[in-house]
Length: 472
Image (cartoon, rainbow, N blue to C red; front, side, top):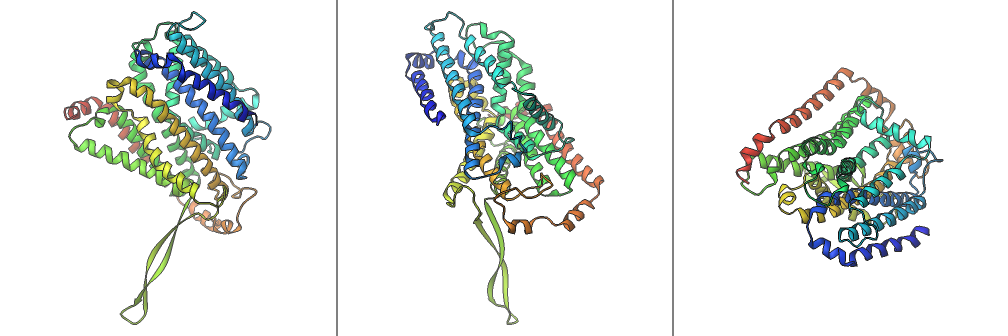
């Protein structure tokens, strides 16, 4: 109830910002502040939206009676309910919008406090760090272990929470990149200067050519390594190697897009550009299909024999027919329409997510104001898509446990029919007979191919820009 009463206050404060005369003046003024200071608000704003989405996920899981505490292996003493998350998000959103309003007023000399405008985003950044600090040793240990297991992949064990958190990082690439920029913005004391587009953080070649590619590529690399670990532990090529291939292709597309931005320019369709576009579409469609078929398990495919009539010898012949239908067991109500809408939204938002990882060079340099205005909405759309994915992913894990635990059953709401279809001890023993040397060889070969493709993208960035840029 309290979030429902407090949320209108946040909406009222946002309406004050949009109706303020300084809003129109700021949009029509120089775009320097959009380049130097907007990324701070954009990154923190996306993380604020992620907090709201996490509360919405908790609400949906409790409504559908999904046992997320057991699946995530959370400590009941430290886990927060959705109402507590909404309370925190409401209070923080009010402070965020209030800070944003004072920043706008300061840009036009209307602030009651005579300080540089950059002080306000710096203050917001510092307060954000303060509230995100763990409040207990248990929280510190939990987040420390989670971070270590993700970073040390594929050598550390992988729990469902570890894989879930690494997947969430792939959707937070751009907000995290903005937070890294905000750290540079504060540490370099750029916030004390007047808004300008040529600050230290914007000019830094190291940040542009090293930090930004690493922030974009590392989450995909972590998920790739986690799948390698699961393959090594289970000796099962499917689904682990198939899922690893998804992240390998996405990683290759992102690295080539970052170091060869000329492939996004208009011009002749060269072989290099055609190969990149095919890989881009293929990786996105593969990720979408994996969401629907594997992560959510919303579509069930069955093979049946269809009669063909009399065969030549007088017997009836048949051929295999494919049957496709929605999953029958659904924990968020019996209606299929919400699930169909989720599939449609995921299809379009998946393409939007991939494009946010590789911003258009033309928009970035020729239309910086438009790019700065539109990117918060594209980043926010991916955060919401990930929340939708999380709600359905936990439902699927509740109904069809996927090998992250020794006990292959989630308490409450499990179906005995699913128990009978799970892997038998004989099948598990057969998988374990596969030579570890063969598994290691496959993992090393997979990693070498990905590393070679990434290295090629880095080493050929100048050559690619020269040879293909003339056609753009």
